[in-house]
Length: 162
Length: 162
Image 1: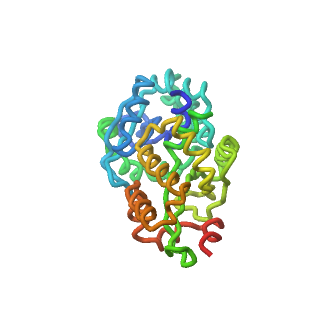
Image 2: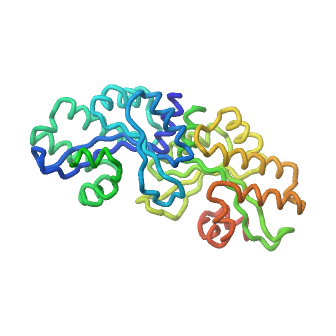
Image 3: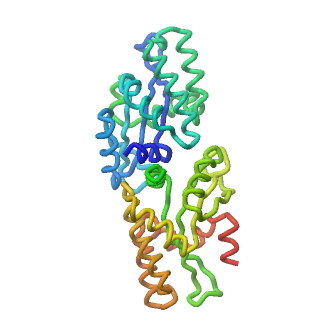
């Protein structure tokens, strides 16, 4: 199962660090590291297996269909503790085989900094923003947080930004 | 490696049966079963590993970038013999975990029929066209072969249609 999950993540997984405006936080922005795997409704069972394997995270229905003809489901792990203690050790022990491993390395650095509460200091926050900006496809989103925000349609994001 | 390949195929692999107009063939159309995995240039090494593992197929550069910022590479196996003797036995022994397994089951049927030369009879050809039409996302393409054709930009397809 472990190798299958690595292969599936190499194909469909995503390690992202999003930055979302939130006036109630110290710096006016919140940093969200997230591990996500998206699948159409027909392959929801595969996401359930992954959720069970990791024993953390949750599956949410994404209302956007994009180019698909079925609802999309996202398995996501957003808890910094779960990322630090479950997801990152797993992918450190079972190496990704695609260029996604570069994103993962940066992602692991950001999560480690957040575990040490460095995102609450100005210097740490700047370093995290730079790291996030160096990740694949993240620059565009960070430069346009409204667009990123529009892409988030599930409850978790709404809740964390309300 | 086997489980990783199954996971990666569940994520990025594609089992397709394309139908391409070719006036030089008996029925004016050629049937192309194909196993494909596409990756950006940064992950070409992963495709090389798969090519080495199977010992068949080839990697071609796809000139279309789609939404990507780098050239795309396709690992493809098109030889009916290689599909029948290498690819299909592998995925029969190592089951896919997503809905892609349904496409694979149909794909395996089509390739078995082609191995028995049934695509050269009118009845066999009709059955194959029906099977291909039942595959995920294939209906649309089959109804519009020009669009399918436009999507094929690498040398192999040009050669086989010339």
